[in-house]
Length: 334
Image (cartoon, rainbow, N blue to C red):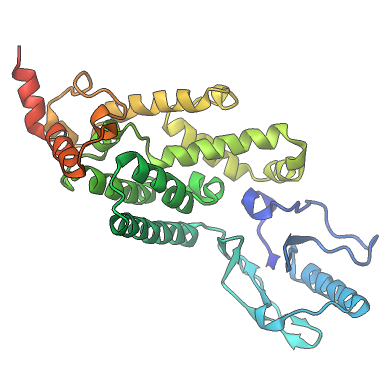
């Protein structure tokens, strides 16, 4: 993989095995800057000439140790525009690729995360439908059980490696992620599609998946700063100014000051800020429910969800509670 972008453009999670900023020297004839996982190896270089030199070193190493390279699975990828002749290894040409998948993360030559985000949402939606179908087949109807299954099976798929692509994701794309969460809550509560997402969250006491991703990212930032084992990642972060700016911008949108990122009660403080913002920034559909519903609908998992009642009755209660009629009725009552 040869790149012509400056190090500041490289996302840190892509380089998590310790990519150094210093150029390759001749002090060690077998030194090759790599990403390594199991029996895979990725060579990183800053220029075409450097990559050719590293390939030559790998050829020498393979010749002296007997290591074999599977050419049918070997590719090279450029970052940015880089002219030049094709690369070869031991006389065999290496095919070029436009997308590289490392530990389930899709890396493209333009260093954008659109394809990675699309893969997460597609996999998450597929996992959701699979979970719901298996729950129905096994007659698993309890809210608490299905909620825990969603958190254990679907949420990790949607938020995999969110520390990398989450900070750069647009509001529009985050709404697509939330759409999967909303689809799940709509199925569980049996409410109409037009029911505002924020009301479903309030009834179930859940927070947006975006906030779960933000919390994972902020926790990762803190780990970079306090754990010696993350020293190499921290060195990369010193160059990834764009990534740091994206994280700060993301946290600022949800009114999460940097001063509390390292707090032990970070999750509680973030949820408090998020709930306040969700009630304050109402959608046009939510205005259909009377101006101020906050006193009527405390934010938290409602007792009827945890009670041992039939699922159909639970859904009937949820539909009634989230309909506009209930708010008009309670406002009119003395």
